[in-house]
Length: 171
Ligand SMILES: [Zn+2]
Ligand SMILES: [Zn+2]
Image 1 (cartoon, rainbow, N blue to C red):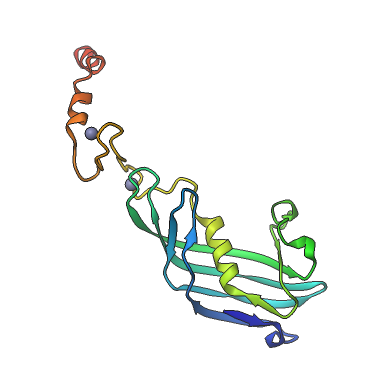
Image 2: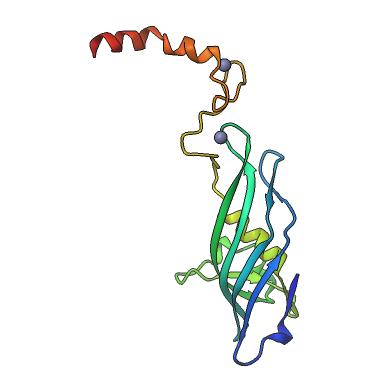
């Protein structure tokens, strides 16, 4: 979905749209699925470009980094972008972040791609090590069982670790 910049008048343009987003490829060959997202914000014409600040709300479903089970992660993200037609704005976002935290984005001078905006902002907003819950037990390194679901016998052996027994005697 696009915003045609002809829609942006001298007083700016407020948008509030619901859009679908394709799955986001993550590292390790897996995808994050996204529920339909809400994008709301305000666009203004500026010298040299279009400013666009607003909020994104969606729910990403992505695999836990410990147990690999997919889980839903609600996201509420804020963005501040300055769209310019300068080719150097593309691909140089990391180095062009200024003190006011406005990030430069590239557009073709005619329309702003909301799907691309959504994909990029959600990607930046995802945790590096997603966890289905803070105390996720992960997979057993020996038998591969999901320890959130099935306490495997490897765990019992671990509990009888002689070092632990020594500790118990001390307590
Ligand atoms: Zn997990
Ligand atoms: Zn096990």
